[in-house]
Image (cartoon, rainbow, N blue to C red; front, side, top):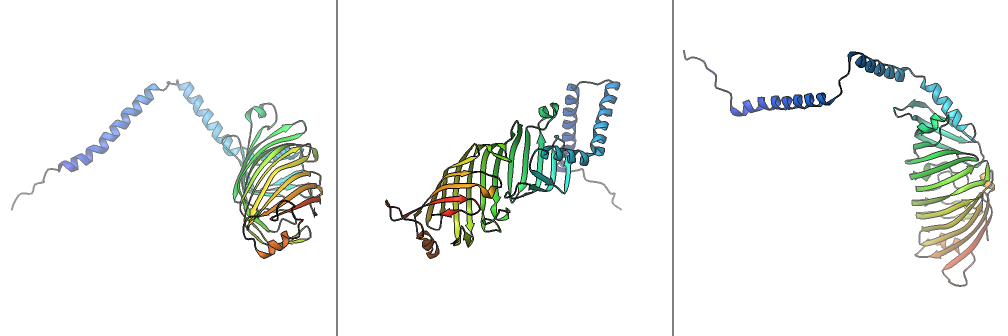
Length: 323
């Protein structure tokens, strides 16, 4: 009977075995070099570091975060006209407060509430050392977009810096006559505001806003029927001084028309009582639908151009008068 014998392993098999060994050897060598550069702790120092790490871990796991978050929210809203409700809340590793399903109810009539799926508040470490949260960093996911900014406590109210990105207006609970999903579009804005909302004459700041992919559904505004507008684009620039909002530029383009609005809004509480002093100029730039053409024909004509219509808008914000 012929004797049994094995063939020697091929060179490729030997290479396959040597490759993991070589990698492991290189990793061990690098680990030893890195360990040699680290400062060596004594047994007492090592136990102290271990004890501190365990203390921080168990403190994080057993800390009464719910009670602390309730006190944080109460402290932030004590001097404001808002009430905050949320479903769950937790502390972040970076010293912030994270909330989910947040509802901000404004106690001032005429200002809609806000709803955010996620809200993160990060107080200033320097402010905490002085016994307050200011400045407070804010980041929120709401209405299909994001909002970020900073809130700083001042002698007369607050100073707010805010930037909005891609908010869906159709989900925003706007007041009548703009609400009930009649306005749609994506809003991007940034601005600053200082003062107290309860006393509008203290308000100062500025605002820039852009609306894209806009839509206005048919309805009645200021006693006049408004046809459906498609593909609305708008850009706004405004400055607020002593509670008076000066609109330096508001350009709206939709369905073959261009509208330019300039003037001022005197802010009052409640917001729908704010006074309007605006000038409207419309121009035909394309082929608007018949319903929109008929509506523009109701406005006074311009002596300089047959394609332009001009009007003055006055009265309160809730019931503007166009003449």
